Length: 86
Image (cartoon, rainbow, N blue to C red):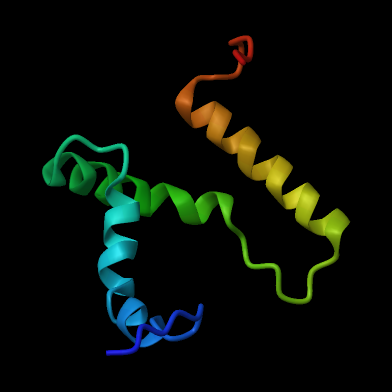
């Protein structure tokens, strides 16, 4: 049997595993499936707050909107008077 090696020959097999790999990548950093599920269920309500739609919006308008959203988040979480840690 002739051995053929080329970067595109294995694409069909690799692409069939892509959804599985995406799930594995999402799970990275979590100790258990339950822990990941608890985090993601809480995070799914928070993340859209920090990702406004950009369609037909100028950069200054986007920055102003994000400033308002971060100020709201600071008020809700009580992080207004805390120093930032790096």
